[in-house]
Image (cartoon, rainbow, N blue to C red; front, side, top):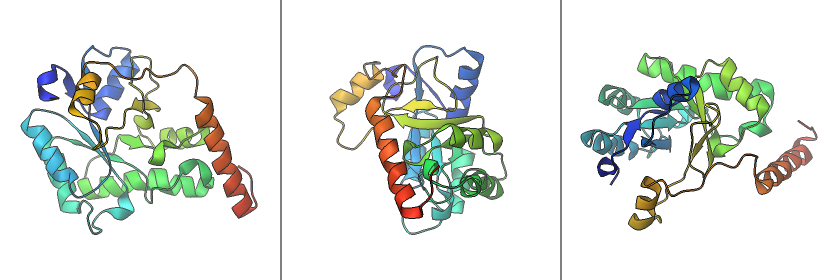
Length: 216
């Protein structure tokens, strides 16, 4: 369905360059896979067979664990031509941790991947989709060229390349609904953060403060 959609498939890094230049064409498709599950390698192979690019975001402490991608898989993904991006070291909610921990999660994961693949890591995805200005700044400081959020909305040409919107496609999504997404019939990014998103973040931070006795 993606191959027949007429859309041009790009990696996150390629899409981010177009966003930065203000030159995003119509009919673009960006496929991302988060966390680094072992079956991602077969997904990347099948996408490549259809001429579709993909970006795989990895939680680096999980590499080589049972059911997860291995270092050998990463090298094959690179050889196929897909992009490998960072997804932190331990998949923690980055807007709930200290600045020292944040640096280890953000910069450390990219360094881990570069050491394994031999190429720079250009893109980052926020675990759980959680980030704030401090987290965004840490991503920029670490040298990433873009970062993906979730938001469950379509991306658009005005998207911030460090807050790229994505739609979650679960196994429960029907073929009919997926075709609607490919036709461009999905949620459009809101101009301002949804109230429930802000409220949920405040609840999480309050819970963390109660546990640690600190406020961030």
